[in-house]
Amino acid sequence: GQSLEQPSEVTAVEGAIVQINCTYQTSGFYGLSWYQQHDGGAPTFLSYNALDGLEETGRFSSFLSRSDSYGYLLLQELQMKDSASYFCAVSGQAGTALIFGKGTTLSVSS
Amino acid sequence: DTGVSQDPRHKITKRGQNVTFRCDPISEHNRLYWYRQTLGQGPEFLTYFQNEAQLEKSRLLSDRFSAERPKGSFSTLEIQRTEQGDSAMYLCASSPPNMGTGGVDYGYTFGSGTRLTVV
Image (tube, each protein chain N blue to C red):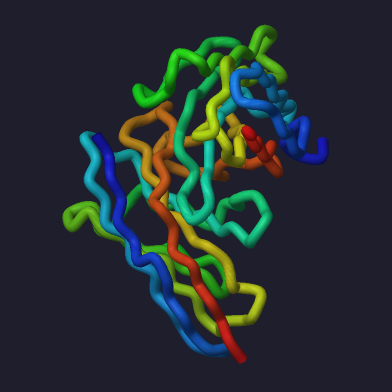
């Protein structure tokens, strides 16, 4: 089976940096993805890590350590519009569907 | 192509009735996924198609749920004899063929979902 653990809530202020951690247990591993979902909206793809290391996309970065079964999403220069739920997701092997974590609700205040 | 379309956006049904939802994926995407999401939870995997073939189905999925993708384009998800516990947002997503190859990954594109309320 597969399971993912991430914090349920994180709060921060505008301009700050926040890190959302994700640990996973899978029978196989083919990559860690991150998705953002605003209230009432659809999940949208943010990033994907198949190999160890940091992937940077603008204000967002994602990190993976396969040996630790651990990854994180780093959000810099937080803005109010970043208030949303963030989900990590894994696929156990090529061609299988993503399994999502329960999500982390990020609240950004001014 | 404007993205993944789902119809209807909302459905209210009485317990015991059958419901059917439709999903039109992005035309170049050969993979189509159905997920269910309840408040405060992540999307829960239901089933997955590659072209017209149903490749994966959640072991947690009741026999009352069935999905089809007859011509490898749109897909339907049917729930028979609905129960109150089926109330949720049903999300459809699609992805291109190179998804999950360990290299470049463009992720899933989700539709806006169908919100089902069983009363």
